Structures are given as structure tokens and as C-alpha cells.
Length: 244
Image 1: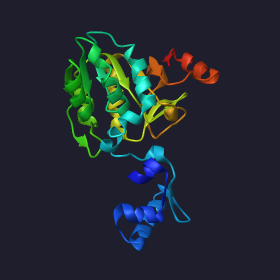
Image 2 (image 1 turned 60 degrees about the vertical axis):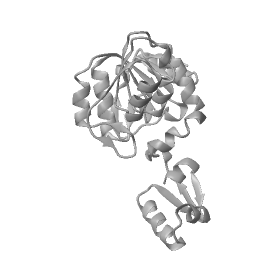
Image 3 (image 1 turned 180 degrees about the horizontal axis):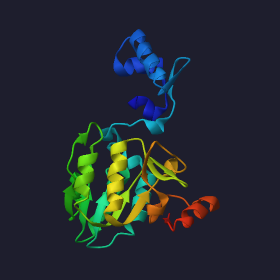
Image 4 (image 1 turned 90 degrees about the vertical axis):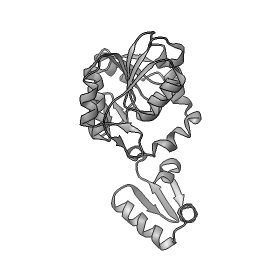
């Protein structure tokens, strides 16, 4: 699945070389994945049905950070809204990792995060006072979420919460594929003065199962390109300020 997530399509011969299993074993696995609705078998291989619904292990994501120019750009724009001595909530997204690289220039920051690698990078590359929320680390995602994390976040108060999202719908707001991640973002919103959403172009006009943040709860939306007139009309209805 990780190979398909990145490449969208794989030939049977590629999968055989990749996992070193027999063709019959791989065919059985592909049949099971197709029944689960994750892939579609095609002549000579398989293709991903919807790569937005499948998680690549976090460690694979961070090895490609240098290639994520759009996220790096968005992080740079987001950093213009940060000031010295702020208290920040920062989520565990890879977009937040790009933002960490911009935070070294600020003094007196205090950052609370649910990201294990995010916390490590903040400690390494900034002078911020870093706190990580309590709870269980989600396997292969380097993130802490769920009820325990939610309750821990409620003990903090922040000036600004900065989050990414799995999907941003101009009618529904921020949505996620994992209930625990949505819960953490709701806690961030509850305990912050302002909330900023960072969204790449592929996240726009997407909607997933778990509601995290409604549009009226968002203060800033940062993207890489100017929104369409129709999209701007919808965000302005909720007094969301947009930055590109």
C-alpha cells in the first residue's frame, strides 16, 4: 500500500521484486485489498482507488520533506503571522515540520504539540519552550491523539493554534479520516484565541468522515494560490482571512 500511495499504480513484476513474494501470494493480497475498496486490480498490476484515505507511514513522509515545495511555501506564509513570545498549538502534520524551520528566528515562543517528531525538531532547531501532550503514540504516525490527549490540551491556553488537515471543505470546514486527530484539533480550537489552517491545493474541496473544525471557528486560512471568487465568497461569509 505504501508503494501504491506514492506511485498510484504498480505492475505485478514490480510488486514481486518489492516484497519478494510469489505471484500467487501477491494476487491473493490484491484480491483482499480490492474487496476492502482500497485498490482496483487492472491488467498487469493494481492501482490506488483514493490515495487521500490511506496513510503513508510518517517516517516515509519526512524523508521526502525537501520535495514538498508547496508545504514549505505555505509554512513561510504562516510564519508571518507569528510574533515573539506567543504560545502556540502546533499539530503533528508534515506541514508543521516545515513551519518548525521558520520558528528559529522568534524569541520567547512556547509551543504545545501532539507530534513526537515535531517536538524533537522544535527542541533541536528553535529556542522555544516545548511541551508534548500526553497519551498513546499512534503506530507509524508519530502522533499522539485521542481522549487522553484531548484532556491534556485542556490544561493549556494558547494565542494561536496552527493545524493542517486531511480535507478542507468550503461549506463544512476541516475534516479528518481519524477520529482521534479530529478530537485533538477540537481541543486546540477550544483552548486558543485564534486558529490557523494550512491547506495545500490537494486538500481543498475535500471532505472526510470526522468533523474537526467548522468554518466559523477558523480565523486564518493559508494556501499556496489565490482562491476562486466563489471560494472567497464562502470563506468571507465566516470572516476567515486568507493568505497566499
